[in-house]
Amino acid sequence: MSAASSLLTEDQFLCSICLDVFTDPVTTSCGHNFCKTCITEHWNINVQCQCPNCKKVFNTRPELHINTLFSEMAAQFRQSAQQKASSSSSEQQVSKPGEVPCDVCTGTKLKALKSCLVCLVSYCETHLEPHLTASRLKNHQLIDAVDNLEGRMCTKHDKLLELFCKTDQMCVCMLCTVLDHKTHDVVPLKEEYEGKKAELGKTEAEIQQMIQKRRLKIQEIKRSVELSKEGADREIADGVQVFTALKESVERSQAELIDTIKEKQRKTEKQAEDFIKELEQEISELKKRSSEVDQLSQSEDHLHLLQSFLSLNAAPPTKDWTELSVRPPSYEGTVVRAVNQLEETLSKQMKKLIELKRVQQYAVDVTLDPDTAHPYLILSDDGKQVKHGDVKKNLPDNPERFDTCVNVLAKQSFSSGRFYYEVQVKGKTDWTLGVVRESINRKGKITLSPQDGYWTIRLRNENEYKALADPSVCLSLQSQPEKVGVFVDYEEGLVSFYDVDAAALIYSFTGCSFTEKLYPYFGPCINNKGKNSAPLIISPVNHTE
Image 1 (cartoon, helix red, strand yellow):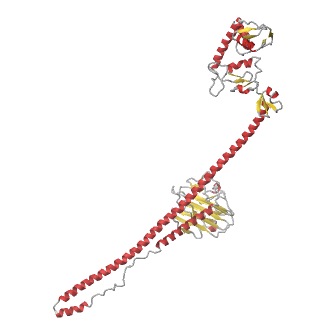
Image 2 (image 1 turned 90 degrees about the vertical axis):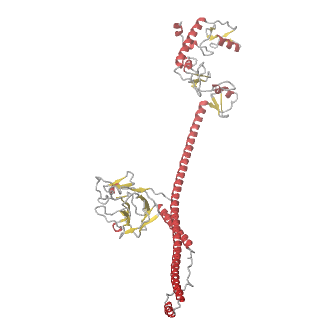
Image 3 (image 1 turned 120 degrees about the vertical axis):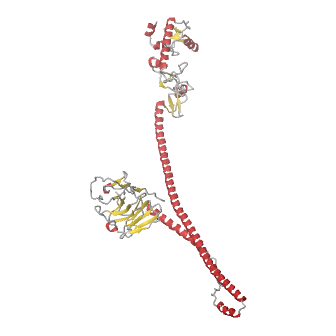
């Protein structure tokens, strides 16, 4: 039996009506096999008894008998197919929520791989096999598994929706084009699909472009917020600086006011004390004289009284206190003068801040030039920091390089206009900063003076500041700068140095005559056994609005 069944192909065991393995197979007189239930229901529906395969018409309804041999073969094939499906189902995926299940599987539903648009059934790998092997099923249209296959059928004509009516913008079947959409513009689904897909591609590109524009707008808004925050931070710092100075000035003015009033009061009290002391002295003398007069007046010795009386006239003179008095001092105008002085201080502070803001708008990007650096100097990779090291590097002695003084110039040069940059000097005990002309001497001993092309200021021994003019000028600074701003107006012949944090002018070289390129100049000085190891740092300028 098994040998006989193996000679038959798989599609020979399938009923052409239900497309499943025969159940109780019967054979018609024309030689075709069907499930007994399938052919009986088929003939019950149709008026004529006709073979579904060869279309042979039977005048009288044939009496059907189960083909015992074929039934056994079909049963054996069904069992073999079930075993095969059982073994393969372990390898196949069970349908999960959201996935399309196989419509044929009983019990555990496996994941469907394909859906048939003719059968309107979704199949797993096992149940899809007949569509791939049976010749009469190979012309069925298979698509990737989808839900709701009934939705692909025309509800009116029960035909496959395979056309698109452009007039009514809807999917239609072949009968629709003949009956309801006869004069309409109808195209195959694929043609409309391609058109709509192209439109979707264009729409997607437009959407992506809109997304990109909005992302750019978000970046723009974020940048605006950053700039706003930076501006706010700068204004807060400026405000704190101004109000700190104002607070200090108020406290100083208050202390001076109190001291002035107390000094006047002290002088008044001192005058009163002196008067009282003098008056008490006179009272003491007068009491003494009173005692002498009283004793003399008690004497009954005529000669003694007369002789003593003469000495009473020699009594010390006393002051006429009638017009003398202690007048309370006048404090009128003291507070007004203190407030006026405070206003003047605030005005000066605002002027300094405005002046610093004015020059900061000419800020430029400055980096150090390693070709000019003394061999002992260490430069950062970004060219923004320089300090003195302990090891002399083996560098070519090119004309631009300093060979004796531990100096370095910037890469950038300026031959017109205005420029400004800032250098952090925090933590250093010695440094020199400024600008130099291109033709300066860079070899051997160097004199830093405007006559030799150097316009610089320097710090030595932690608190000795000098402007290296002709002659040098000692600078008296209220505080030690931690960041120095350098401003140059080429045409004006001006080089100014600022204490950035205090918004204070340190020194200005005026009336300079510039005829060459000017280079920013940096002298970190020797590290002095680590005491001066902090670097000079070219800092970004916080531009103020």
